[in-house]
Image 1 (cartoon, rainbow, N blue to C red):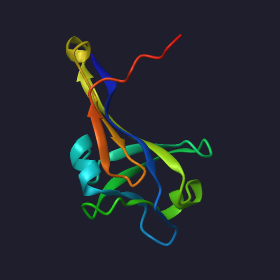
Image 2: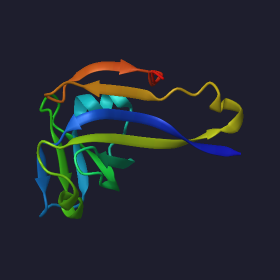
Image 3: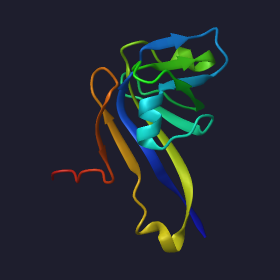
Length: 126
């Protein structure tokens, strides 16, 4: 059996653009894509911390070093510049390998530059 597991997460990226009149997708700075392992045209799930919106689209490559996070097309109704997003990609992992699976977690700074990369989500304090 295959399990749908978190492959990659970009945690708390800041929206820089919301382009309604653009073919749907989310443009992400190439440096963030590389750090996360998210591929261009890969399906991504976006969770908007600012307003609770959750939507699915696909990633496209933004210019390296630009800090771009551009939510495009109809999804532009769900995010505004300045909103914080969690961007996730998921993948199928064989159940036998699931216990050893580690996602690639990217934590950008306030300018959407890679600040830290990890393989585990820190445990929550009780």
